[in-house]
Each structure stands twice: as C-alpha cells, then as structure tokens.
Length: 301
Ligand code: BG6
Image (cartoon, rainbow, N blue to C red; front, side):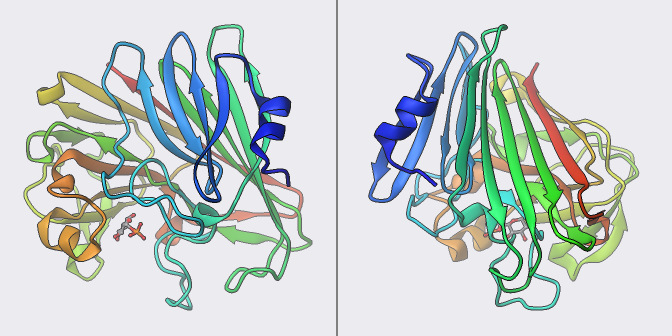
C-alpha cells in the first residue's frame, strides 16, 4: 500500500478539490473541497473527521482533545466499527468496536462527479487469521460522496470459503448546539437495549428522544430515518439509511466524559452519536462471495 503523500497526490489528487497531507508523524489525511462542501478524512480508519456544507455550520463533531496518533481511536468524526460493534462477544480484551477504525486503509478511487460532488473510496483487506477474534477473510470498502448531503456506503465482501458474521456501524458524532435542547425522532415504538441499565430491553414510547443524563441505547428493528432537531442551530439533520437494523444513540454525559478524558471540557454538550448499525443480535450473515452494503445519507434541512 502506498502511503507516500507525493504519490497519493499524483495518483489520486484532484486540483483544488482533493489534496492529501500529513498532519503529524505517520498520520495522513485527505482534504476535499468542492462547490457544495468541504470535508477531511484520515487514512487511518478511513475516518471522516469533518463535513461542512458550504455556507453552513460543521455537521460532524470532533473533540478538541482528539488525538491523531497511529493506532489510537479518534474521538469524534465517523469511526467505522467493524467487524464487531461494542465489545467482542467472546473476548472483551479485544479492541471495542473492532479493528477497522485503527487500521490504515488504502485509497482506491477519487473522482470529481458531474454534479460537482466528490467521490473518494478506501479499501481494507482482511486476510484470514491476521486478527485475534476474527480469523476470516473479507474485503471492506468505504465510498464517500461529499456534497451538500454526505453519502457513505460501507461494503463488506466475504472473500473466504465459509459464511461470516459481521457487526458494523458508522459511529457518527453529530455536532449540536446543546444536547439538552435537541430531540431525536424516528425511533417511536422501537425496542432498545439500555446499556446504562444492564442492557435491559425496553421500548421507546411514542415521542422524541431527549437528553438529561447518560444515554447509551441500542435501538433494534430501527430502519426509519432519524432526525436530530436542533432549535439552537436552527437546523434538522436527517439520517437516512439502508441495510441497517439498529441505531445506537449515545451521549456520555458528565461522569463518563470525565472518565474518558478525551471529550474536552463540556464536550458532551455539543455532540450526540446517532449510529447506523447492525449490532447486538442484528449482526449480518454474509455467504462466501456475497456482499453487504451499509448505506447512509446525512442531509441538513
Ligand atoms: C458507543 C457505545 O457506540 O460508543 C458506548 O454504545 C461507548 O458504550 C461509545 O462508550 C464510545 O466507544 P469508544 O470505544 O469509542 O470509547
């Protein structure tokens, strides 16, 4: 895999639109700028770090205390959770949310599209046996289309000889004016596992999700659009998705933020994670040679 910035710019750079650069030792990103939006993505984790529609506010939150170091998860942006969500089912000493978010991905395509949006795609090849806890073969690709909406397609192809089980999530940190004043709709009637209450199964009554304490829920049977209504920023962020049965809603609130140490001062007030996923029992079974697409579109209304 070529990670040399000059080579990446000569193979995949697009004048004034797609530029690769190094921001710290062994840590490279790509910056995208077009008529509709700007964005940046780190090669580690194929991790989208920012997306700002032209003339608008940042839609994606990044912690002021985030560290950009090789092998360390980044606090904020869009971590890719794969091939499991949360703790590994059999061995909790393995990295939470899998290994894709800290692996170095290969750039495979960039393209200025006709509607002035930008496509950028990355690949991660997993050969059987080179990761504890997941001794299978698969090819993972992620395709971003950066425009006034953000479209992401996370594609898992089973390249092995037996069926594989995958949990995946786009663990998106959305920027909000004040989490205490926002609502999330689209989850009416969904069962959920309440991770702050021993993962007990509960049911969302009809009505919006609001925040006044630590919230960590895996909503099941959740396939509808979710909308984050943010009166403070006078905007609604719409989250549409395909092939995702679960939605995780997470805000660590005060004590957990302090324990985590990388959310920044009062950072929890300005973020909420709404994660399009296949998690818990909603994991996906993929037959040899078959693919699974987890697709999302984020737009601002
Ligand atoms: C969420 C989980 O998806 O991610 C939370 O539901 C977890 O339980 C959070 O705390 C952050 O995880 P991490 O591994 O990035 O600290």
